[in-house]
Amino acid sequence: MDDFAESSHMLLTMVIGFCKAVNILLARDKIVTLVGMFTNEACRTIGHGESEIQEKCDRTIQKNTLRYTIMIETSVLSSILNSLLTDLRIRRLPFRSWIPYDCSSSIAFYFTYFHQMMSMTACSLFHVAVDALFCGFLLQICCQIDILECRLKRVNDYGLDDLRGCIKHHSQIYRIAEKANETFNMSIFIQFFISSLVLCVSLFQLLKNDLLSMEFLALVIYLSTLLVQIYLYCWYGNEVKLKSAYIAVAFAQSDWTSLDDGSKKMILIVMQRAANPIEFVSGYFVTVNLDTFMNLMKTSYSAYNVLQKPQ
Image (cartoon, helix red, strand yellow):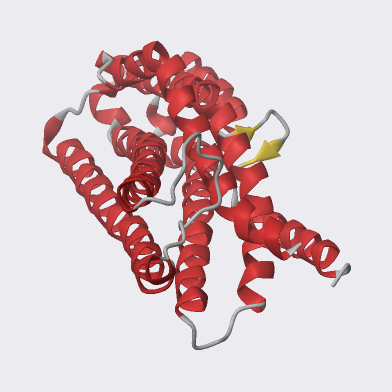
């Protein structure tokens, strides 16, 4: 069980990174289409107020990406430092692997050692790129909802044409969310499913290490990074759900009383549709929200107890 825990936690992380990279390559055309949907006429900013909302969202995405990159690469650096202080001294590779040549010579060993370090770093960059892209799309959807709410406040100033524009914008937001869910569905499912295994295996490995050892510190940083990674998915998925549920309230708070009966009927239809908020689904059955995050923690702990029983 110790050998399994030691070997599998990084292997599973590599599998997640590989699957994400493959998903992005296969879904390239969908991602290009998704980016184009944000430049649609209905989503373009109008006026200074909407531009401020868009700029604020863009700055948030940039800051989140930078912070997330620093966090992920700090975790990688801690693993590299731990390996340099422990594995390198005794001429042991940081990860168990089958190698089609003899590593007994110094050149072969250092080459293989460097290769494993570079592979781990490359995998971490895959995670950063895909996670930042997905969370960026979620934030952009939230931004479009804020812009829609801003437009609804001045419906009376522009009349029926502006109301129709708001309805088209609302429909476009739902299409964007549907396309994003379709594009990243399998990546989210793989992330959630394998992460639950990685969590319980890493926790099992963490508790068998000495509290003051470098291995313990490296695993704590790794686990913290993994939890933040999952939490970001769930947090922003939950934000999209909450904001989309508020659209019906935003329509109700607009100056709809001054509109004609036809416009009131259109608002009623949109409010009925907005009663079903936007939800991102992992593997077509697991919703991406904070409740799922808590359930994932419980599942991982249960799996950890199963692993612990043989001990």
